Length: 170
Ligand code: OFO
Image (cartoon, rainbow, N blue to C red; front, side, top):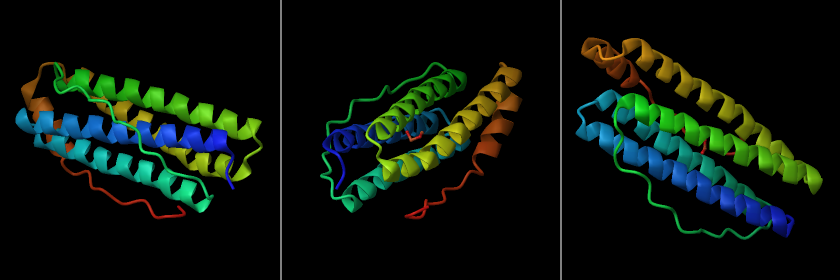
């Protein structure tokens, strides 16, 4: 049976992941309206991955005999000044999520909760990958500057991203 303090912290993290999903779905809609279908696709895949992150915690909590509580999800922004602005906000948000995961690791250590500590290793790796992906796109956007042709090429590249569901127990 999972410790109550950890149960509450994971429920809060489910909410963080749901907000992440909401944020990226909002960005996807924004890019769709802006005619950048590749960026819209990339963000939609990101939205799907965030739902997986939430569900991985959700299932884990149930496996450990915890009670899932779903809290209210904050309203995300609807507009961004430019693709660079949206990607910089994405990176900033992911850095916040990394901090949340690190705090959960600290709590797992404090409570000597080894199963949760193990689970969190997956999220730590995922955060490294997410921040690196965002940084790569930000660097490309900075190189592109206001070159419309370059932006369209990047948009085409981002259209290639596909969603691979995470396996349970992965
Ligand atoms: Fe973007 O990693 Fe979950 O929130």
